[in-house]
Image 1 (cartoon, helix red, strand yellow):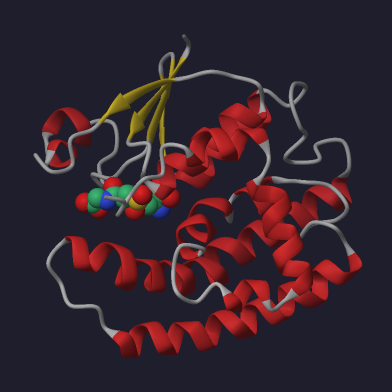
Image 2 (cartoon, rainbow, N blue to C red; image 1 turned 180 degrees about the horizontal axis):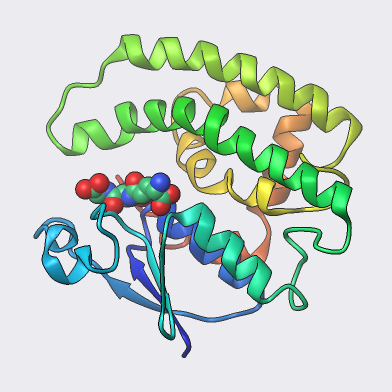
Length: 217
Ligand code: GS8
């Protein structure tokens, strides 16, 4: 198997890379990284990602980190198989994929990851959940999803009437968010709700989601 993905199935960032690989009809070997034992901070792993974080993709002599960059690489390498995640034959559509991918990483991610961290991850590490952080970020998330609601009224997906990397990149954090007590933030916005139901029921993400058991007993 050519592609080696170093990471963990329940990790959001590993899930993002894995979803992109499955969308392209490819397989990979998941190489587990023992975060509890600090394997990601040992020289062997730091040689692959000097920031000591998962995931890392190895494809022959190429080593990549940053899940969104990995997903983009996979989308470009296998551009002619599976779904076209980058709209490589249409300059304008490709530009809109980039716009909405930036929105995910720069605007959506900081807000939703703060919420997911507080309700899901902090308690598992014996930290107290900071409700003020959750409340402040829920307000921000509502405003962001108002923009999405309006956008998704005019196109089925974020970048247009086609599923793309921009949508895919949202899946892992939204998946964990939809296990929180605040799912009404999504469900009260009908176009956002329909979009989430659509993108999360794609075979690629359904397969990945099976391993996203973080916080489950
Ligand atoms: C973030 C990687 C990351 O936070 C990316 O790949 O998108 N911007 C990077 N990885 C986390 C697991 S998230 O599922 C990680 O490795 N955490 C352990 C640590 O930071 O020590």
